[in-house]
Image (tube, rainbow, N blue to C red):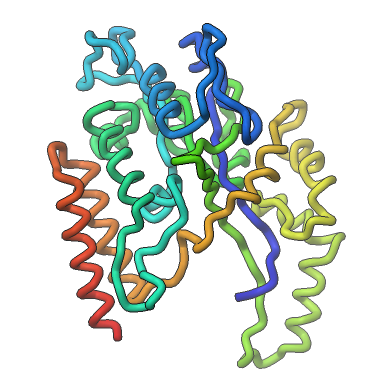
Length: 321
């Protein structure tokens, strides 16, 4: 589609203060490391462990967490986790890469990892209570300048590199860092965003456009432009020095785990979660309708709802032929 310019791997971001208050260790800093419980025992850093940790970090107004019998789900004041600022395709990809369109180019499908991720999220909304559901998502205590995480009342999010910027996080008073994405059934998937530049075949001034593109991708200009994009260079030769400059410009004096950002590139989703779909706008409207309904409606049979979605997507795909 174009020449890669900036890439935006995804990873975990977590709030030191909320982990310290709960007496919990932080998420693993590197891929392949286990999660270490306070008693020193280790667990695989997977979706089950994430769920358990997140429930301990979800707290009601009386100080009880979501693992305790006294916990009041109608008075939650702090949540443990969410996939922030993404759609159902991105949330599905948290468990594994996939596509709503099968390889034959005509059949609607919901990949198994996406089904598992959607049901895991639904349980997190309405049964385990560690993810803000629709009503809680609009609560005042989760309204920060950069969304729920920057409110200081959300312990962990899964997010892309473009969020690690002052405009997104805001001038928060608490400390935070970056951690590894958990696995699902032994597989890690850290979805990737990327920005590319291209010159269409029908461009009126391809030679001039090529000169501009060469300038924008040059060693002198690209790192400066990427400071604005809050992305890391796609060019490997520009990556080593980039994070030192990015930290100095945006988070002076702070030490961040940039290694996990680079390591996350190895787990990029293929196919990408933002791949083309037939009748793209209509398809997008339908799956977002499904997701908003689930986020605001307890007691659903998610298997049945997903089958209704698949059937509706098939109708849209058929009409687009």
